[in-house]
Image (cartoon, rainbow, N blue to C red; front, side, top):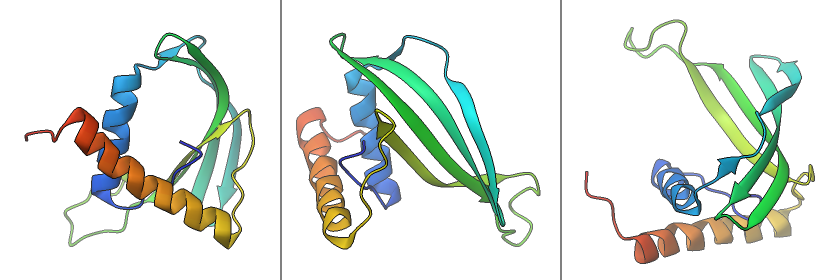
Length: 125
Protein backbone atom coordinates (compact mmCIF):
# COMPACT_ATOMS: atom_id res chain seq x y z
CA UNK A 1 0.00 0.00 0.00
CA UNK A 2 1.63 3.28 -1.06
CA UNK A 3 0.01 5.08 1.88
CA UNK A 4 1.69 2.92 4.53
CA UNK A 5 5.10 1.58 5.49
CA UNK A 6 5.30 -1.76 7.29
CA UNK A 7 8.63 -2.64 8.89
CA UNK A 8 8.32 -5.59 11.23
CA UNK A 9 7.50 -9.17 10.31
CA UNK A 10 4.20 -8.92 12.24
CA UNK A 11 3.17 -5.76 10.36
CA UNK A 12 4.04 -7.29 6.99
CA UNK A 13 2.07 -10.44 7.83
CA UNK A 14 -1.00 -8.36 8.74
CA UNK A 15 -0.64 -6.29 5.54
CA UNK A 16 -0.82 -9.48 3.48
CA UNK A 17 -3.83 -10.70 5.51
CA UNK A 18 -5.59 -7.39 4.73
CA UNK A 19 -4.68 -7.80 1.07
CA UNK A 20 -6.22 -11.28 1.12
CA UNK A 21 -9.51 -9.79 2.33
CA UNK A 22 -9.45 -7.23 -0.53
CA UNK A 23 -9.37 -10.20 -2.94
CA UNK A 24 -7.12 -8.71 -5.62
CA UNK A 25 -7.73 -10.11 -9.07
CA UNK A 26 -5.11 -9.70 -11.81
CA UNK A 27 -6.78 -8.30 -14.92
CA UNK A 28 -3.65 -8.92 -16.96
CA UNK A 29 -0.46 -10.89 -16.42
CA UNK A 30 2.18 -8.94 -14.45
CA UNK A 31 4.93 -7.78 -16.83
CA UNK A 32 8.54 -7.21 -15.74
CA UNK A 33 9.45 -3.84 -17.25
CA UNK A 34 12.78 -3.15 -15.53
CA UNK A 35 15.71 -5.09 -14.08
CA UNK A 36 18.25 -2.87 -12.35
CA UNK A 37 21.36 -4.27 -10.62
CA UNK A 38 22.40 -2.07 -7.69
CA UNK A 39 25.60 -3.25 -6.06
CA UNK A 40 24.79 -6.34 -4.00
CA UNK A 41 21.06 -6.13 -4.75
CA UNK A 42 18.75 -6.21 -7.76
CA UNK A 43 15.61 -4.15 -8.28
CA UNK A 44 12.78 -5.58 -10.38
CA UNK A 45 9.80 -3.49 -11.52
CA UNK A 46 6.52 -5.06 -12.65
CA UNK A 47 3.50 -3.44 -14.25
CA UNK A 48 0.28 -4.57 -12.52
CA UNK A 49 -3.38 -4.16 -13.45
CA UNK A 50 -5.55 -5.39 -10.60
CA UNK A 51 -9.12 -5.26 -9.41
CA UNK A 52 -9.63 -4.98 -5.64
CA UNK A 53 -12.89 -6.01 -4.00
CA UNK A 54 -14.62 -6.27 -7.40
CA UNK A 55 -14.92 -2.47 -7.69
CA UNK A 56 -11.50 -0.72 -7.60
CA UNK A 57 -9.30 -1.06 -10.70
CA UNK A 58 -5.70 -0.07 -9.93
CA UNK A 59 -2.84 0.13 -12.40
CA UNK A 60 0.44 0.26 -10.58
CA UNK A 61 4.11 -0.60 -10.52
CA UNK A 62 5.43 -3.17 -8.08
CA UNK A 63 9.08 -2.57 -7.17
CA UNK A 64 10.94 -5.41 -5.49
CA UNK A 65 14.51 -5.22 -4.19
CA UNK A 66 16.27 -8.40 -3.21
CA UNK A 67 19.76 -9.64 -2.45
CA UNK A 68 21.51 -12.88 -1.66
CA UNK A 69 20.80 -13.79 1.94
CA UNK A 70 23.62 -13.62 4.41
CA UNK A 71 24.94 -17.01 5.40
CA UNK A 72 23.76 -17.91 8.87
CA UNK A 73 26.11 -20.61 10.07
CA UNK A 74 25.30 -22.75 7.04
CA UNK A 75 21.55 -22.74 7.78
CA UNK A 76 20.64 -20.71 4.67
CA UNK A 77 21.43 -22.21 1.26
CA UNK A 78 23.71 -20.23 -1.04
CA UNK A 79 20.95 -19.57 -3.58
CA UNK A 80 18.51 -18.10 -1.03
CA UNK A 81 17.38 -14.52 -1.68
CA UNK A 82 15.82 -12.11 0.77
CA UNK A 83 13.42 -9.35 -0.20
CA UNK A 84 14.59 -6.01 1.19
CA UNK A 85 11.82 -3.83 -0.25
CA UNK A 86 8.37 -4.45 -1.69
CA UNK A 87 6.69 -1.23 -2.81
CA UNK A 88 3.55 -0.67 -4.85
CA UNK A 89 3.38 2.59 -6.77
CA UNK A 90 -0.20 3.42 -7.72
CA UNK A 91 -0.37 4.94 -11.21
CA UNK A 92 3.42 4.58 -11.30
CA UNK A 93 3.93 7.38 -8.78
CA UNK A 94 6.83 6.95 -6.37
CA UNK A 95 5.84 7.81 -2.78
CA UNK A 96 7.44 10.97 -1.44
CA UNK A 97 10.43 10.08 0.72
CA UNK A 98 10.86 13.32 2.66
CA UNK A 99 10.79 12.86 6.43
CA UNK A 100 7.27 14.25 7.08
CA UNK A 101 5.81 11.99 4.37
CA UNK A 102 7.82 8.98 5.58
CA UNK A 103 6.61 9.54 9.16
CA UNK A 104 3.01 9.84 7.95
CA UNK A 105 3.29 6.60 5.94
CA UNK A 106 4.93 4.85 8.92
CA UNK A 107 2.10 5.92 11.23
CA UNK A 108 -0.40 4.67 8.63
CA UNK A 109 1.45 1.33 8.65
CA UNK A 110 1.05 1.02 12.41
CA UNK A 111 -2.64 2.02 12.23
CA UNK A 112 -3.20 -0.48 9.41
CA UNK A 113 -1.52 -3.23 11.44
CA UNK A 114 -3.82 -2.58 14.41
CA UNK A 115 -6.99 -2.18 12.33
CA UNK A 116 -6.37 -5.41 10.45
CA UNK A 117 -6.07 -7.31 13.72
CA UNK A 118 -9.21 -5.62 15.11
CA UNK A 119 -11.42 -5.89 12.00
CA UNK A 120 -10.31 -9.27 10.67
CA UNK A 121 -9.37 -10.78 14.00
CA UNK A 122 -6.18 -12.37 15.21
CA UNK A 123 -5.07 -15.36 13.20
CA UNK A 124 -4.52 -18.46 15.28
CA UNK A 125 -1.37 -20.34 14.27
